Image (cartoon, rainbow over all chains, first blue to last red; front, side, top):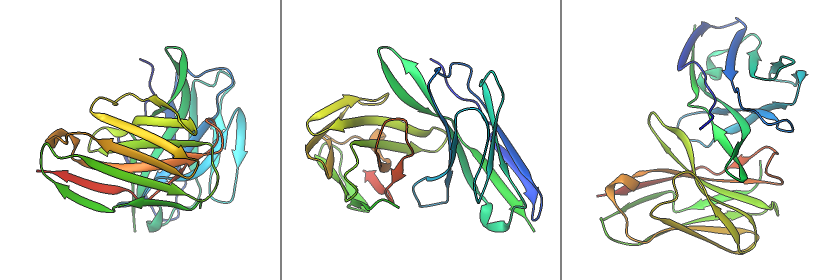
Length: 112
Length: 112
């Protein structure tokens, strides 16, 4: 079964830019790539979504190369409150129906 | 955030007893999902619904059933709870299967 692959954990420091990369070799032609953030004892929260090239919103940027087999979430100037688990989500064909496959998540720890 | 309410928030039950978790949404989203989250496994889809009375299985559906008699409510039932079903259960909704998901706050279920 196809799945996404992310680093298990990452550390960084306040004020730095953090980049988290997700691999998704079996992404479908029409599928979007979505990233979520999860804090302890809460449900995941949408961060950003894109299809190709670059997308930017008020909290993050998403870089997607032309082959779309990977994507990179970029968090500019992180703070301690960005410590969370980040999930990459893509639609992957399974059997006869599309199913949403979640990666295992990247635990990001921001240090002072 | 979409108005998603999960009930109960916490539940302790005994092996072999039936358990029903409820998800209620106020956003009129077509898609509703039940996920479970366990350490080391990220989020795994149990069942989902793409409309009233239209449901389908996810990757870990054994031992679970669902019902959706109204757009706003999606019920998850464990007919005979087992210790392996101890987990945090999240409900999510979405306007379309590709669009971003909105999550509830989760239900912590302990089966003793």
